[in-house]
Length: 274
Image (cartoon, rainbow, N blue to C red; front, side, top):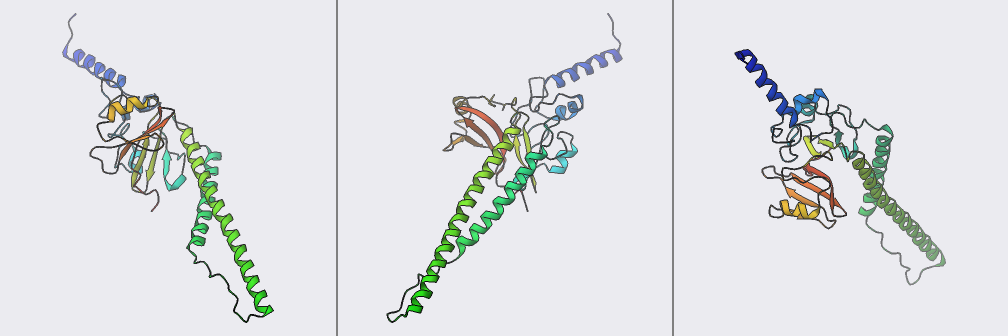
């Protein structure tokens, strides 16, 4: 069958669209048509397979991008899903909607944490009063006064001890709140912004690095892929790996029971609040 030049151009264009669409999507659980353009814009999404999660970011989000630019790109839902620690977190298109109850609980936990730890720091900064002593010729009244002073000091010490214990518990509560937040977006992934721009990219559960590492990979697989590239194992069994060419940025492989449970690229030196 003969084809004119216009027909050839139409067929070629259709093939190109099919290749791009086939290679997009692993860096997000959203498959809506309105996401085809952002996914196609990613340099890593090709006919060779899904976009790899890594130093180049995810669906156009990469180190250095500002929050406003990221939201303008249409890759993210525009309503924040967490404001904890002063950062602003979003999810990819199609991700979970904001959970007001969880966010309110986060805010209350963080407010208590800041209050108690501020008071504990102030108490710790105080110089302890010298222990009272009785002069050789002390009267009964002097003894009574010094005894009352000692009792007051003991009460203050007890109050300070309780304050320190409460502050320590508030720190545990903050860790629990962060874990609850992280679990809520373990499948969809999460994007966190500091005042200066992107601070953390948490990969969706189906995303993988160019070396094939993702959620579910074993520690042996992580070490085989990155052991010779500067991989560092912490005391909890998780791993970090410097991102080449991106000062301050690291791959983070959180490990539980010998398998990766969270994959992220983050710069922890960036401040969430001014």
